[in-house]
Image (cartoon, rainbow, N blue to C red):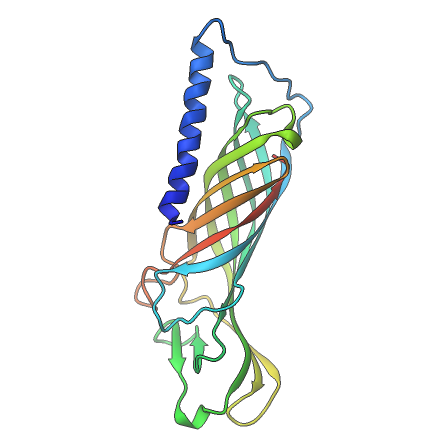
Length: 249
């Protein structure tokens, strides 16, 4: 399913929910149910585990294997006084992506050269290189904000939940981690780490959506701005993350 289709589906759910809420409030014979949420906690942790896919990447960037994403956030929930089924959640946390590349492609990931981020072919003299894995690790300090709905706000552990929102993040680190079985000189095994975030956008702006029941659900996250700085590598790479989420609210 395409990204636009996923967000359109969840947006449609919200519009139907909102329409139903408006109808119940204006019809005298069918007033909105009163909920007691005085004992519901306002702060909670959110844990996201997902798979990363780089959309619009060039063929030279041969991603392969289980590229994963981990996000941990502390959120604060503010319920609407007029209808506590709806709320705004905001918080802070860290999102970390681990993208793996095809170790058999005969190419090196290069993130710290003056030409920008590249995936370079080996020369004939380096044909004997044997990789164990090639990975790019990026981490962001993020501030998520969500518009939320739950049909049983007084029983969050037994409620259907849905949310749409955005995350604004700043890049903390970018690391090229290559594990060699043997390099061109015959040395190995060993791990080479190169840390450099110069060629990556410091800002990450991502759209988010999730649905679930109780403390578990599914989520999708799409980066709306370019992953790599303009002129410093392939244009228009947009990471997409799909996975599971654990949250109290």
